[in-house]
Image (tube, rainbow, N blue to C red; front, side, top):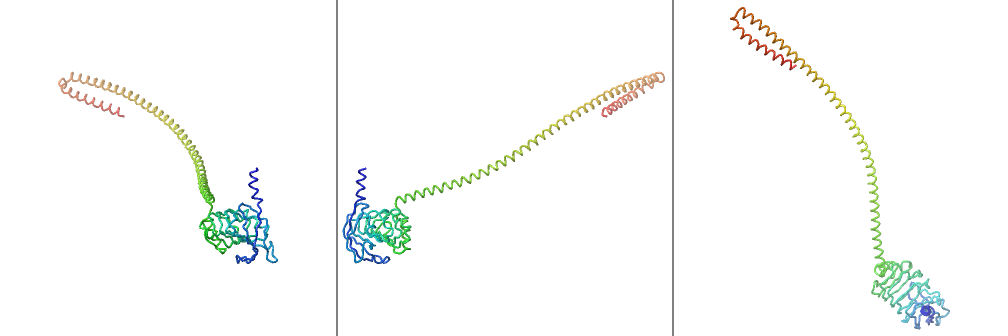
Length: 359
């Protein structure tokens, strides 16, 4: 705790008295003639937040500290922006600290000058202009960093300065080296500064932001693709459900048709079996009838043959007896004739039997 106190104590309690030459001066025609305190002493301001507690010097007739609107220093012993000037000169609108060894400026250094119109840090060692440096200095019309080493400028540091019409970075030989003296030119210059003087960390942040933006773009594209795929999947599911219902119905109908066909086929087979059985019965009956008829007719033929044979034998016997008794000589004539007659009868009987079998 003691070490911290020792470090902070000189930063807060270092009070400095300055000696001024008070005079009227026209440094920039835009704001006209101003009553000026030109620093003629060489105060040692080598610590940040060094407070100027008082100012000495002879005022012009009827003038006092309240009339001072411009502070000018050309001292090389000023390494930091002094604090407290606004309490000594409450109406200050122009602050010139030239030829100092100022390396850094912070928002807190300028906060006490809400009405400041001119800031001039010519011939210093400033390298970086931080974010929101001029947050409380919205009335600024002129900012001068002539012959410094500025190479990094926060891109939005000038955006809120609506009255800024002169911006001087001439002699920096870094990211920007020109002076602009009109509002339109200043706006163009600010664009160049944003492009060419970005801080390293800001570039890293931009690269990170771009990377994140690209990643977000890719993620969004993937989300969109996933959404589209989900929609397609939902559509396919709906079509699948519809097709499943359709094929299920078709399967049900096909099952019914097959069942009906099988039922009809079974009935047809039964009918065919019955028909074949009936036909078998009919054919069996016909065959039996034919067999009986053939048997019966065969018996009739045998009887007929027996009767014919018997009749022939009787006739022949009578004929032989007649011949033998009456005309023996005719025997030799009649015997061949009878043989022929017998053969004829046999042939007739054969054809008769054949015709009956055919019928």
